[in-house]
Length: 74
Image (cartoon, rainbow, N blue to C red):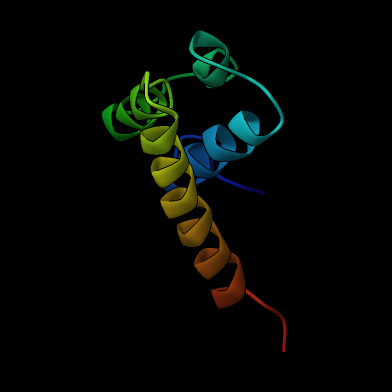
């Protein structure tokens, strides 16, 4: 079972929520107590410039992919 209070889980949750269309406050609403790092991620995903949002999203998707790859069953 994932630890929903962990920064890693919360970053992944916010990243995937953004991908499916959640924006701004809706990104953090389901999390019981989002940490400062995750709140900063949500703010960066709300940047007014599309290029900046895309950079942030790409970086987070890369982190998520690496994390999932590290847990791959062999």
